[in-house]
Length: 408
Ligand SMILES: [Zn+2]
Ligand SMILES: [Zn+2]
Image (cartoon, rainbow, N blue to C red; front, side, top):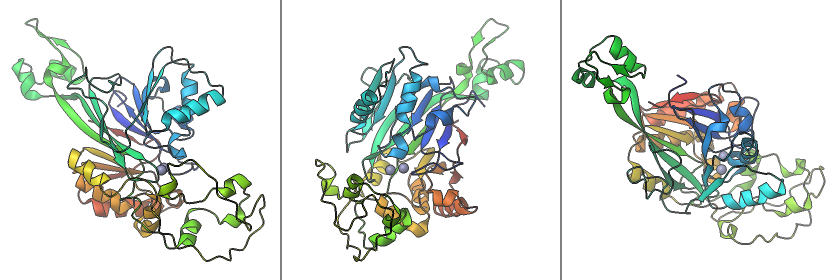
């Protein structure tokens, strides 16, 4: 099992960690032990230490789907710790625009010395990007250290720019093709068993047969999605009070500094890329106070668009890929909270199931659960059932921290 290529779900909860679940990270472990990480939530490096078959010093590439904290706060600590374990081996960091600025800011401010090269690749905002092209290695964007993998990035709709990574893995099956074995005069028996175990054999006639001579080349298409909604920005929010009470404690229970009080809870799309100008603090705002402040204002009728991306992001991805073997997709909310999914650019169980159908997926792995479901006995069961209902005959697996999925 340890030698197989596999996905390890390192963190599977959204927003903030719980006792049993950490924030987002999926590790793709190749059969040679090397690792690619997809997102790096807070505490990822400690989580990786829990698994004996995982060697964090073999991380070669870190893909960041988007810059929300639950996907990126673990990056700095991991990069720093790897300084002790890597000599001059570079790491590739691939993610949205802003990734370089983030590191340029945090690394010097925290006096972090990195002993190895970091290659940062920021993805174009709206285009599908081919990151590698194994058919033409000289022209590939980057080889990312392997010639048996190709990677594409697709933009997704979310509060900020988010990406899905399509990874096409080509590897030799561990199963011996009987006909190919027969062509060498090998039937069932000692030689066949040795080849099945990945060993080369020398036949009585002196011919040496390697496992790759008799095992088929297998392609596995894997799609790992960052946080995403359905055309984020189309939804109109009419009941802001309801949304805030669902998502976070009421403002009156918080101690708020003047600076954070001045930052609006919702950032209109039109302001996202503009220089930050903090609006004046409302006169009745609860500054540095934990005492309740009555909310006498009626909730504003919110009609502005938020976030980035539109309803074409997903159809474009589907028309390009058409088919995947394994889809890793967020399922932050159950169907009943579709208004929250729409508001925050996330997906419901139903959406995840339907998307697996659109992509003809063999397996759908759901993750990034709101902790309201992970902290109740039957919470995830509800998500699972709803997803399965929408996914038809597709195998649905709910991820948990430590869940390992073999890619064969
Ligand atoms: Zn998230
Ligand atoms: Zn997010």
